Length: 181
Image 1: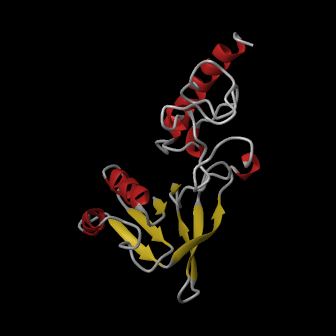
Image 2: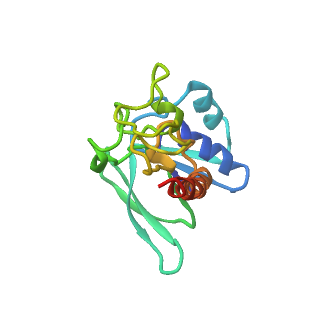
């Protein structure tokens, strides 16, 4: 099993998977785990016997028809590549909201994540241009009737199960909103 990434989420993932997999290999683009990872987590990973860490390593190709069979990894320092058997690959390479298409439409924070619900209330005031006599619903953006769920939201948990749950909740809020228009 391979885990890609060098931040806390990748480290936590590797620690979790190490309880179930016989071998976990972390592929880190950077030169060390300590860049972008808490020292206590680095220490845990380094003391876990079934976790290997390959720094300066990236995934170049993946192979498989109905499932993953192998990957090609490359050491960016030596430019050496190798194809390795791989039945599972988990990617933790950071969070970028990719919400630029909403610029000027809904409020976002400096990093580009969409503000929703209570995050829109500043100093007891609703967002600029808010026309309704109620506060924004939990997943509602600064535009009434536009909702956001998952990693694109400020303060999201950044887990698939959470994003799916937020999506289901957003549908409920959409129905609630539609009853008022």
